[in-house]
Image (cartoon, rainbow, N blue to C red):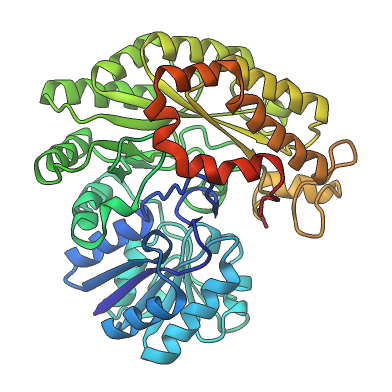
Length: 466
């Protein structure tokens, strides 16, 4: 078959491919990893694949529809987002109407309420929940839809849901060709960028799921690879991909490992193997704030550059409610150890958790400034339907008409105002100004575009989260 993998056009600087979607102030674009792995698997099965990542390529609706029609797909694989779902479904329906192709909706957001999503589409009647490489390949092979696990169909009001399938095993993950090779052949790697990584960079996954798997707010833990699950590729397979990138993609300057959480044991095993292989390619990863100094020192020796860390909140009651599993004191010590090991940190903080107050949010902001990571973001919390966080907020009447956090002791207007204050407190702090003076290109001149976009957002522009 001819299979079109599509991340549809929406608005400028929209980023659909992370664990939550948003309009990026920094023009960050992660790779469409899940579509990429699907494409790599489909090509291995002998299908002809085209990837269109419209937001990253700055493609408008008319141009994307033209490119889609010119490809003449037999099957459209449509990756949808939270903010863009209505747009995505309309666009997918238009492609189906114009080309007459079959179509299936995929992605973590589509997995939340598949019957409701299908009901909002006019022409697309299929959706795959969870990991979708194998179900999509079975559709492309012409298998009987009744036997394709994880497939949901619109007939009977979406009740035509097939049996679930197990998460992919190590052998199955190793069998998928390198996603970096797929992106080399199908994407412009210079369209993808993030302030925390050398440019150009590459995204890969060495495993699926989160070994902790209990945070109440995480979409992927509750809708993609669920629970306390961390299924990994063999380290030999991962090192093979690093060798491939270093040899065949010399323009790539760093690799971001997009595993939900790169655990301490996994990181140590990988670092030792990378050192033994003599691979010098810099890399970064997501990490929980409880790694030991010894593990991080080993990671640094193996070329680790940056850790993306979800700190979330300084309030112990908030951390308990959201089942974070790591306290502020432990994360503070972790930060000291990471800096001592020579690692950079991108800190993720969030406002709008259940029971949070303006006072506790201010403590989080002050804590973020004391921790002083290299970069930080302050997320307006997104209550994804299907997560325990959303269920609790809805049960207590703490969601407004737009589905955003709005609590009696911490209103949506106050949450938004404090998020702006957080960015001002962090990025106008004397410590950050000193960083700009010491490294002017890295922190200022190299980010002028981001700064010009961020200033109005920090002071007067309203953020769109829903």
